[in-house]
Amino acid sequence: MEFNGARATSRSCDLDDVDALRALLWERRDWLCGDAVLLGELGLRLDAANVIDFGPVALSRVAAAHERESSERRRLEDMAEANYAAQTQTHAAVLDVLEADSLRDLAARVDQIARLRFGLVVGAVAVEGGDTPEGWLALIEGQADALLGSGETARLGRVPTAAGLFGPHAPAIQSVALARLSIWNPTRQGVLAFGAFDADAFTEDMGDELVVFLARVLERAARRWPRP
Image (cartoon, rainbow, N blue to C red; front, top):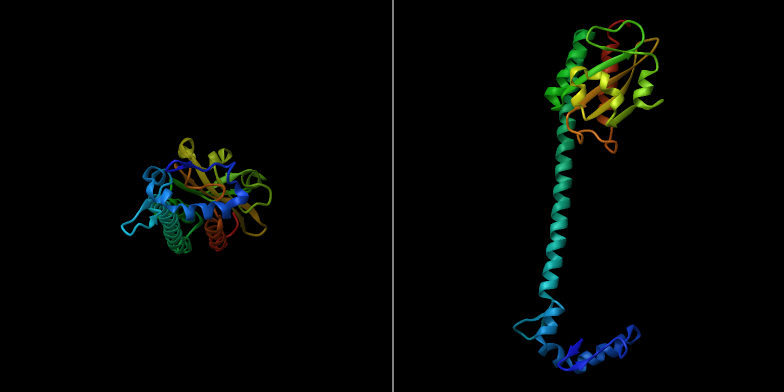
């Protein structure tokens, strides 16, 4: 680079000579202040008081930092709002489940909760072995483990093997939320299932607390009626 004809290079002032470079700039500060082209290349400018102002550089950095902060704040606010709405709807769904007057009504309410409370496509309840209550889906022994993973309480995301839980909607289901059910005595394993058209409605990295909570409520509600 040049200061009004004088050139400083890495050979004349390397990284070990920062103090010497600073002294040179101070001694010949007129070079820097008088070279508008160099100042422009450095992203600097002189203000009205002849003081070097890091205007373009500083403003662009501040603007970028502000945009990142605003974007992150909006993301957190949107997430908090979505979580609050989901919790509110979940509490309402609990009341819906507790108001069921039969196992058949319980299954129907799960589907209504999915569509009306959460804006999903379908909700279903399935159980392994024995007689299947009206409105419930039948699973073969071990199928709950096959769908959820051995011993797992929930599974979210894309689960092609769960297509049979969603009837005529199955071909369009892109993501699901599944939670294990353990009902009656002796215990029968089952699955609470919700399906969505949107592939991002449920993803593997989402928390499963709400769907598991609903499953626990449904288990307790189902125990009001005898084991089929």
